[in-house]
Image 1 (tube, helix red, strand yellow):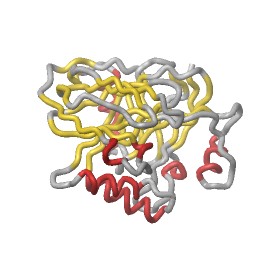
Image 2 (cartoon, rainbow, N blue to C red; image 1 turned 30 degrees about the vertical axis):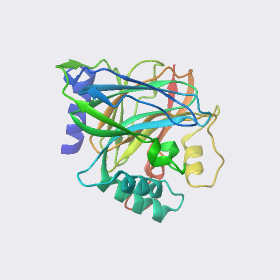
Image 3 (tube, rainbow, N blue to C red; image 1 turned 180 degrees about the vertical axis):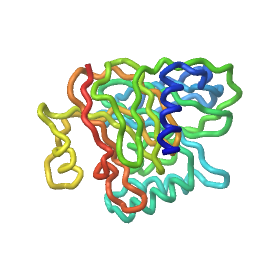
Image 4 (cartoon, rainbow, N blue to C red; image 1 turned 90 degrees about the vertical axis):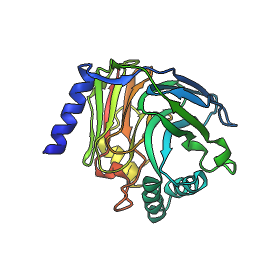
Length: 273
């Protein structure tokens, strides 16, 4: 009950515009098959990370902060393990990544650009394209980012919310294309929130069958959304998706069982208008 109350307070604060974030300069990144370049420093506050992809495979760019004493190479090795197709290996890697770094989110993009507004404080961070994890030069593609002192807070303008909980997503049945959406991880582990277009007539049972590997893929395009957030981290997603039916899902596995979180209810159907 206390956790649900805390979630409700956090969502209400964002949707009513209470001061929560500061205003820094943004980062506009263009990702190619060779990776991306980025400034080495910005000021603290609400970092706006805007991403577009010239890579046909898309891009999943996120902001992470390594914990004291963790080497970048160690984190990269564990991240690759966490994205393994083997459930036991992925579970062990996910636990290691949790110990290695704090995850602040970011954006996954395909054909449609997107931006995420992320609350940050001063310190040393890294920008990571999670889709590059299998590349032999993965570590060299990760970009360091120093965040310095910021400015005074401002109110957010998000008008809808997606909440990841231990029992799945709390999400509206419809979203407005181009309107900012507050995304909060209120679960006990890191997770993400991805929107993928689906075939007309797709039902929740079709999503369940896909994640259980008993049915075909219902998806008709690449994901757009918020990449992994640590518990109680949030981001404000803005993207002009084409109108239609979308699945809201996560590809992250349960770090206790190795099962896809989608099989525990972390999936929904959303109409974008």
